[in-house]
Length: 435
Image (cartoon, rainbow, N blue to C red; front, side, top):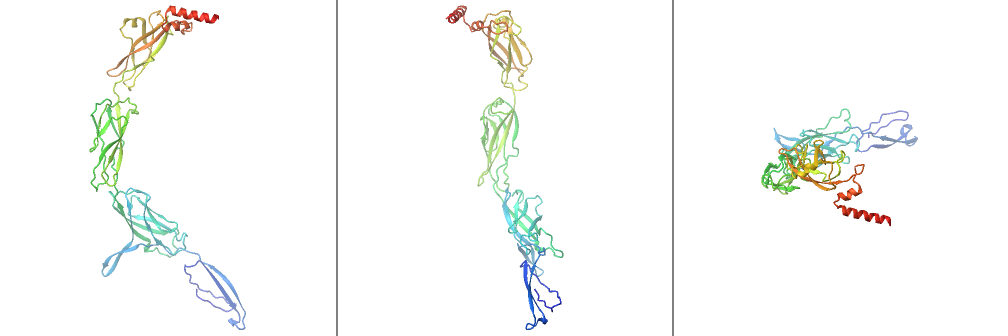
C-alpha cells in the first residue's frame, strides 16, 4: 500500500495496491496538527478495517505438462498441455485420471470452483469429468463402458472454467484447455451367444440322436485367437447333449410335451461356453424348445365309480367325462360308447352324450338287481388318428327311497351280501335294540 499524507483540515486520496494474499487489512492512521510538528502539535490515531471482496479475475489453469515436439524454423514448437490415463474395457464408474488445476481466486468460492467440459474426442459419451469439491481437481470418469476391439485409445480435449463468469476485461487463459490421452486395456471377455435365449420348434417324441440345432457362441476378443468349448449346464429332464467343439445340440431321449419339466409347451436347457484364455472366461446361453403336441395320450374316463337306483328313474344316472394329457386339437370333443362284448353291457346300460366333454351312463332296462357292476366304457379323443381307451366304471345298483337315494338295506345289498346274511344282520340289530 502506498503512503499518503496531508495537513489537518484537508483530505487526500490514498492509493492502494492490493494483492490476493489476504482478505482484510487493518490500518492505523495518525493525525497531527501544527503541520505535524511533533514538539508543539497534538495528535490522535484511528483504526481502519479494509475488507477485500474477491472478483473472478484469475481464470483456472490446467497444470499438465506441455508436450514439445521439436524445433520449427529455429523455434521450439509445443502442443497443448497433456494428461494421460488408462482404463480396462467393460468397466464403468472408474476414475481414469485426475486433472489438476490452479486458480488464484478465493478457495471454495464460485470464483475458484472449477467446471470441466469434454469438448471433443468423445462423441458417444463414454466419459465425464466430475469436480472434486475438496481439491478442485477434475476426476475423468468412465460412465459408459469402452470396448478395446472398437477403440484402443481416446484423445479428448477438456476445457475448464469457473462456476462464476470471469470479471469484465479478463481473458480466458490458453492454459484452460488440455488434451487427455486414454489407453484402453484389453481384458479376456466371455464368449457370447448371438441369440440368447434361442427358440426352436420340434414335435414331441422325436427319436434319440436327433440333431436339434447348433447353439454356438462367439469370442469378442478378435485380436486374440482363442478356442471356445461347450458343456451342458442345466438339462432338467436329461434329454440333450451338446458337442464340445462345435455346439451342436442333439437328443439322448424322447422329448415329451407332457413332462413335468415342460412349462407352457417350452422346455429350457442352459449351456456353458468357455475359452482358453488366462484367466478363463465363460458365458451362458439358454435354449428354448417349443414342443409341438402329437396325439400320444389316450383319454382317461372319470369318475371311476358311481351309483344308480335298481329301478330306472330319469334322475338316476352317472355323469361321466374324460381327461387327456394332450393339447388341442388332440383332446375333446370325446366320443363315449359301450363295447359290443359282453352283450349284457349294451342290453343293461346305455350312454347318452350331453356335449363334447360329458355323457351320462344309466340303466336301459326297467330293473336291475342290486349289486356292484363293472361297466366298461370306450372313450375316444379327436386326434388324427384318434386314440381310444377302455375304462371300467364300478356302478353300485341299489334300492332307493323316495328321494332317489340308496336305502340302508339297499346299500348293504349293493355291497354284495346275500339275502340270508342281510336277514341275519337285521335280526342282530333288532335284538340289540330290544335289550
